[in-house]
Amino acid sequence: MLRDDINTAVKEAMKAKDERKLSTLRMVNSTIKNADIDARGQGKPPLSDADLLGLLQKMIKQRQESVELYDKGGRAELADQERAEIAVITAYLPKQMSDDDVKAAIAAIIAETNAAGIKDMGKVIGALKAKYAGQMDFGKASGLVKAALAG
Image (cartoon, rainbow, N blue to C red; front, side):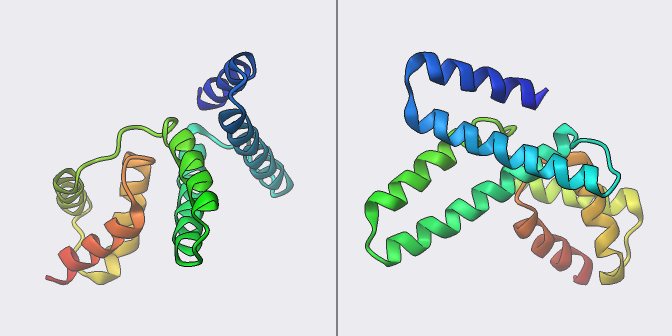
């Protein structure tokens, strides 16, 4: 499980005295625990690996936005810190699909779900998230799905 991999990496980072990796992984664990607590409060089970992948992608996206802001503000040291965190978190995501693979996956899902127009976009995105969690940027994918369904 992804949780076990992260906990093992925390121990390895402690032994290696890798402060950047250790603090990033502790932050990831904290975010996971908070999400589990939220889920429990809503009567849901702990997050699955697919849910965790979505959570990690969200964390990466937040850091990418911070990098942009720090670069614009001339804070290179803070931007580098965020980039280092992105690198640590990215290690726990499956290999990202290429643009061509994403387009092929979208075409396959559209065919599977018999999606006919924009009104079926939610159905297509839901199927993509179920099948390819953590493997593609769903922000970009939704634009591609919309274009495919409109055209």
